[in-house]
Image 1 (cartoon, helix red, strand yellow):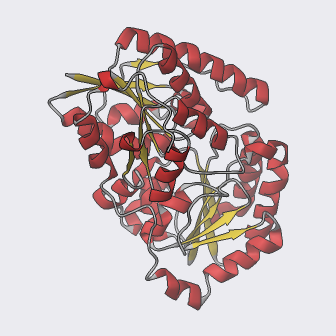
Image 2: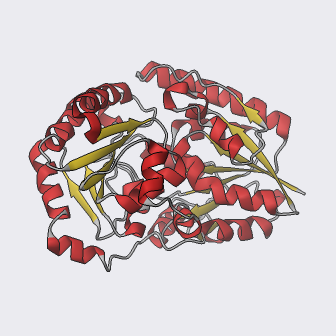
Image 3: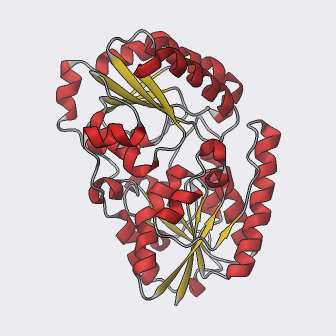
Length: 384
């Protein structure tokens, strides 16, 4: 039986891994091993480790990264704990292959620990660009430490190959998040309102704003520009989700909390919505606002607009439903005016999502089933 160790460190990446984990769990030729850490263990981010257990997964190892601050030294300390924690987990579990997704600093620790232990790594969502964040460099570093690659678009596959990865080990499967859209039954409006404890209004926006980690000292100023624009909107309700655990995130949280308090019944801030609530929100809001990758990858699947603010997602392939704007009050207001315009709303009816329509998890499973992982190490640098 092939032991496949899936690593999850945050609510967002867990939601993308969910159907793949279910598939591994159900396969008689595979044994799912699950290592949980990062913000899953943090009360500040909703202690989402409990949600993983409620979903029916056995957690084989978990460890605390002491994510109690948002300064450079705090993040570096957590990265050091990640490297040590993953090394100990892999030593005990002895997996045949490790599965990681994305570009978080915790994932860098997992890939490095696997590299030193000579355990092959399967990396999901490599080859992408997000030029406004240190995640961009982390993602490419993880690619070079990985042995199987599953990309969300053909352009990303070509980029991974240009980085020296053998074409026969690089698979274009589409966006992992599209499986949720294809396979989940979403909440109706009343059910959704009850689930999050918030009444929707005439107009509604789903807002997630993360720090731009290449300029994290500007996080407070940037969120101020967004909030100055939002306060001018009439008949609009706001659902804020908490930013992730990047440097500078607390300045964002504090300002949102103040905005929500002043807005009364018109706004709410939710630590962790979970995939069902989060994607159900996309069914009921007018647009996604901020700089989350979900506005780029998942939102077009609901044919709603995305106002992508600033530079965090620079470089990603974007659907016609995504409007880019600078992080200034005027640019944000102009972008929202475009999203609500009749011409743009008509355009949304025929928008195509470059990240596919679902099925990525099963494609990954098919490759894992057909791969002799013992042959993945050592790997060669591919040159045309």
